[in-house]
Image (cartoon, rainbow, N blue to C red; front, side, top):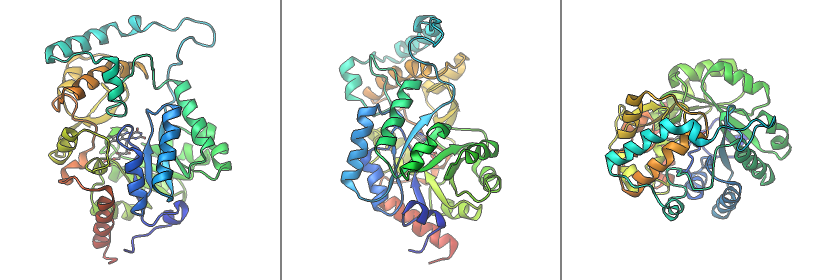
Length: 375
Ligand SMILES: Cc1cc2nc3c(=O)[nH]c(=O)nc-3n(C[C@H](O)[C@H](O)[C@H](O)COP(=O)(O)O)c2cc1C
C-alpha cells in the first residue's frame, strides 16, 4: 500500500487515516485496533473522569506500542459547578430545569420508559454517556482534571473537540504531544493555528457529533488556504476510500473518520445501534440540540422529534445532558432503537457491514489508492 502524506511522518503512522474521537464509542480496543492497522487510533474520552481516563490510556499502551491520540471536549461556555467565584448562588437545577424535566418525564411516561436505578446507570457506563447519580460531567472542573491526566501521561497526540486547547499548548508541546483541534470554519481555524496548533481538523456538517453548518467539500479547501501550511485533516461524511481520496484532492493531508468505525466489532455501542448504522441512509440523521445543548448530528429518533416539536430553549452545558442522559440510559436499557439509535453522520449510507476496525482501515486505504490510481 502506498497511501502516504506528510502527516504520516509527523504522527509516526503508516496511513493518513485517523479514528475520530467518539466519546463512549471510542474505547481502548477500538483505538488500539486502528493504530495497529497503521492509522492513528484516538481514544474517545470526552465523558471519562480522570481515573477512568488514566486507565484507558494504560489499556491502549498495553494493547499496542503504536502512536495513539486522546480526544476530549474543551467547550468555552460551560458552567462552573457549585458557586460562582464572586459568591453569587448558582441557580438550582430545579429553578433552571423545570420545563425540561417536565418534558423529559412526560416523554418517558408516554414511551413507557422507567428511570434507571443507580446500579443500572453504573452498568451502562461508557455506553450512550449516561448521567451517573452524584456525578456531573462536563463542568470546567471535569475538563481541567482530564487535561491534567493528558499532560501527565504524555500522550503522543491530543485532539480537542469543541473549544481551544491554547491554555494547555505549552505543557503539551513540552512533552512532545502533537496537538490537534476540531474546527468548523476557516476563521476559527486561523485563530487556533495562531495559538500553536500542530494539526487542524476541519469538520464539515456531514459529520456525526457536534457540528457547524458548513459542508465538508466547502470547508476543507478554505481551511487549507487559511492556515498557511499547517496540516489539515478532513472530517465529515468520509466513509470509504473515495472520500479519503477526495479530501486529499482538496488539500487535506488525511481523514479523521468517526461514523464508519461505529460499524466495527470494537466500537462500544450496542448491537441495535450498529444495526441502525448499517441500515441507515444519508437521510437518517438530523442536527439536534436535544442531547448536549449544542448542535450535534445524531440519528433521527422519537426523542429528537419530540424535542424539536416542544420548541424548548436548549440549556447550557452540562444541564442539557442532565435532562437527556437519563432518557437515553432508560432507552438503551430497554433496547429502544426508535429512541436512541445513536450519533452518526450522513456518510452512513456507505456503510453496509460490521467488520473488525483493522479491516475498515485497510479498505479505506486500498479504496483511496484505487481512486487515486497509485496502486
Ligand atoms: C458516535 C460519535 C461520537 C462522537 N463524539 C465525539 C467526541 O466525544 N468528541 C469529538 O471531538 N468529536 C466527537 N464526534 C465527532 C468525530 O470525532 C468526528 O469528527 C466525526 O465523526 C467525523 O464525521 P463522520 O462521522 O462523518 O466520520 C463523535 C462522532 C460520533 C459519530
